[in-house]
Amino acid sequence: MDSRQLLVDTMSELMWERGYADTSPRHVRERSGVGQGSMYHHFPTKRDLALAALERNVQDLLPATSELDGQGDPMTRIEAYLMRPRAALKGCKVGRMTQDPQVREDPVLLAPVARAFAQVHDSWVRVLREAVAAGQLRADLDTERLAHTLMAVLQGGYVLAIAQQDPGPFDDARAGALDLLRAAAPSHQNTGRTA
Amino acid sequence: MDSRQLLVDTMSELMWERGYADTSPRHVRERSGVGQGSMYHHFPTKRDLALAALERNVQDLLPATSELDGQGDPMTRIEAYLMRPRAALKGCKVGRMTQDPQVREDPVLLAPVARAFAQVHDSWVRVLREAVAAGQLRADLDTERLAHTLMAVLQGGYVLAIAQQDPGPFDDARAGALDLLRAAAPSHQNTGRTA
DNA sequence: GTCTATACTCAGATAGAC
DNA sequence: GTCTATCTGAGTATAGAC
Image 1 (tube, protein in one colour):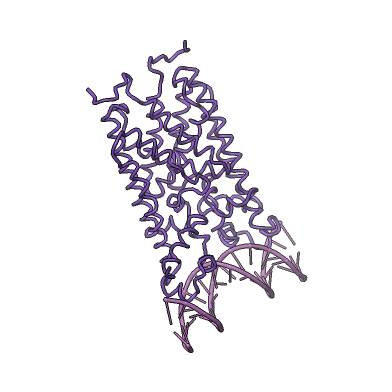
Image 2 (image 1 turned 120 degrees about the horizontal axis):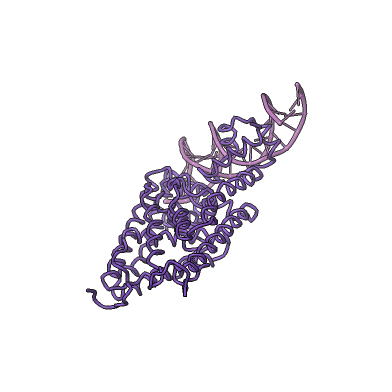
């Protein structure tokens, strides 16, 4: 593999594990095995490398979204996306960036994060609308809001899990969200087209 | 004010703003005006100061919980706690610590965070049980889970808000959670004692 | 493209005088 | 308790040869 790609891959891992501020060029060199000269040849500054790595991490996140965007029963897709296996104790490689002081103060580094979340939000809104249309969710629910609520459950679940060093709270949080969604079915249970 | 307290207050602020790893002794000295000698007299290492500051930040968080623990209508208390004014773009001064690499790897620094969240979880469970008992929530909901869900909504809401540099997603997330709770009232609306 | 050498600042302290 | 001086290593590069 070429040095450039190796650097990006390594930085991506480190940014997931340690964030940006606390990852040094030395860390990257030691883990990747790429020398000083190569590193600064490909990426003039740490920030340039971080930007490439972050864009890669954002790309990693989007395939999962296909679970929301797919065909078939909306509620089933919602459950599949919410409950998909996730490394609760590692946290979200994109969401984590919002807590890094040097990322949050840097509009260029924050931009890919904002874009990624906006895209996930869109997918959520679409599937939630379909669930309403299919009579699986009450029509008086605000789908834009609810999309943020469900994204927050996942992002916050990571925080709780890391605090306790236990995936339990993460799993509880998402299971509880699903319970609530099911409880928010329309009163006269119609699973087909609505009236 | 004495130097010791000034150091703790300053470190508390900085840990909220920048986290632990990216806050240096120099930052603390410059903002607090306390000299090098005093600083290392009171706190032999940066970590010692951080621990004191973190414990202070945890204490700051708990008074808000009284809103959950109070008397009166459970659902009203839930709404009051969820909707209380919060600095969405600053994030949670306790939850933030879970994303700091040097905190998350240090059991001593992580412990106060875990304790604080466990305590908030307890308060949530209590008020949710009361809401079930009062007929405001379906009795088949798992209150332990749901408590984690609602905590996650707040913690994750901060992440979304910071990503967009806009409090909107935070407010959406919590309002959406409240919508869901209301939609999860028992089918035959009884607001009094249950049968 | 990659290597080695060099440089300058900051982090995170320690030492000893007052 | 507070001050100033000093120290070692790490962070973040730059320079120039191969």
